[in-house]
Length: 466
Image 1 (cartoon, rainbow, N blue to C red):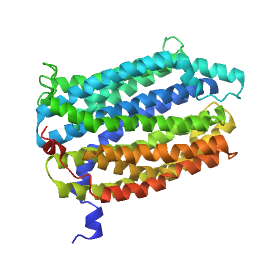
Image 2: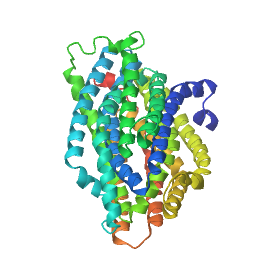
Image 3: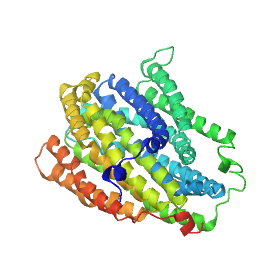
Image 4: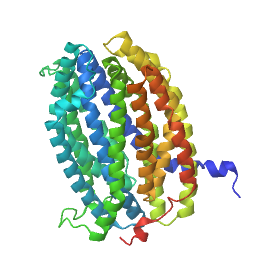
């Protein structure tokens, strides 16, 4: 019988193995979010309208990004287990499927964004705001969106390759790609937004072009490395030869992957719907949330990547048939995520007041941003726990259950609650935001019992004979 310490805490070797996978992923995403933060601050120096226009446009880029993550998640479950089984042909076919899916999603989202740009942007602008502010916000949002849509291509392809590289335990290469992109992005941001270094002064369009070029470089680093290191990436040999995907495997990836794709898409649309509900309280709320989201996203990288690492670690163990070891590992990872996220949340507190002061905007917007950062910091351990539960369930291919866990909670409970409070009460934004945020406590309880049931413990690559 294990003691509580043995059950919930690992030894030095355990944490060394976890950190070897986790740290490069965190560093990569911290770098990416740090660049986004600096980009946001630079745009914020142009004024409130440019900042709001870019923020609204980025809501739709965010929807695309999360949909890509959801799309490649299904084949990644199989890829991680194939790698654990040392079946590189199977892993190769999962990458082919990811690439095809990415191309389809890029085409679909590009057409939708370009054809419906103005109606989409107007969803986040309250009709009773100042007419001049509305017109300027819409114009800046349109200017930014026309360029940033080009970043969908390199981002999608880069994520497809990064996902398969990480499955093999090689998390440093995507980190290097992000580091290279950071340097270029910072240089181009400062040059193209303000007209420095002899570059044209393009304002918000300059910020978009800097992001596009950085995404191309980030993707190129991972793709070139994968294709030039065959020994470390045996699945890459003959990747485009015939481009065949086993029919049964294809069916299983669609069967298990489609719920994840739909879940991630509807979840992120749900997040955007909640943002839209908040936005009817005025463009000050849009500005405040934009500022707060920059810093909370930067700190939130840690718990999000713990979830991603959980999926890889457990997927490898399940694929190798180590069921009890996977269960024991998950207990330790859940506690690890809670402890680390609490430390990160405490580290956020000094930024509650300091960070909003970096923006050239009104005191009302800064005060709202400070409040949102504080509420978010307190909620971070809750999100960390439910995020790790989600990736635990996903590691064993229980995508139908993750669909219920994520989507149903958001659309059946959280979104209707936010809509009612925003549209049918006179409550202020601050109280509404706090109520909706802390409903995550309910999801913590649900996640606890789902993971404890052990329904996620299964080897899908042997079970399905793919």
